[in-house]
Image 1: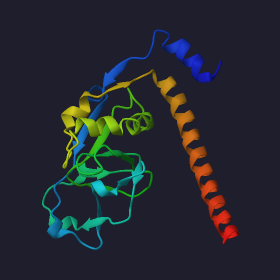
Image 2 (image 1 turned 120 degrees about the vertical axis):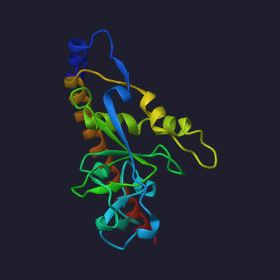
Image 3 (image 1 turned 45 degrees about the horizontal axis):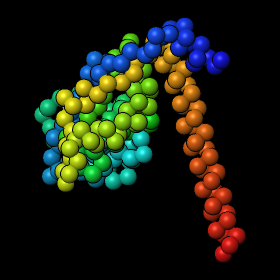
Image 4 (image 1 turned 180 degrees about the horizontal axis):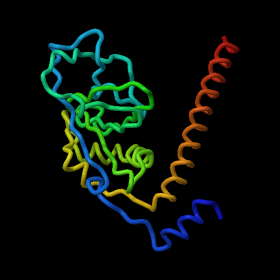
Amino acid sequence: MSKLDELIAELCPDGVEYKSIGEVCDFRNGFAFKSSKFKNNGEPILRISNIRDGKIDTNNLAYFDLTDYAEDLSPYIVNKGDIVVAMSGATTGKIGINDTDNIYYLNQRVGKFIPNEEIILNKLLYHILTSKTDLIYQLSGGGAQPNVSPEKLKKIKIPVPPLPVQQEIVRILDNFTELTTQLTAELKAEIEARKKQYE
């Protein structure tokens, strides 16, 4: 019996409780930065196009100057570990995590999940959400201009096992992700080597 099986048998023998995202998370919508005030450098703005492959893609970032806005923009900061979602457009439903030490500012149409870590671990929420991208897209209505509302996101039900079970699940999934990344890199290198060989 694996450690995970033991924890489940001990801590949730009758099954895992499901809760809505709204019960375990706060949610923040992005700020409407004006494209006319975009700069070539300054503070980076996280737009829907910057969410790719479960992470934040730093190519094609837009920037702004804090002095151009009178508002307090601190609630829109995306810190290391924060989970974001594209809420409209072609990338609707895509989930990303800030796995860098850099901060970004949430643009409109990008949302940020703020989990209550006494109930659900941030990293487990990330793993669960990355498995729900198709569902989020369906909730957006699809079509030419899909658009999902925070209210619909908050109603999605997710499993919320006890925290020790969550910790073990995260450990397993992180190891699996690391192994997959390593194997992908090795496979790419092998393909390149074969191409050169055939040439």
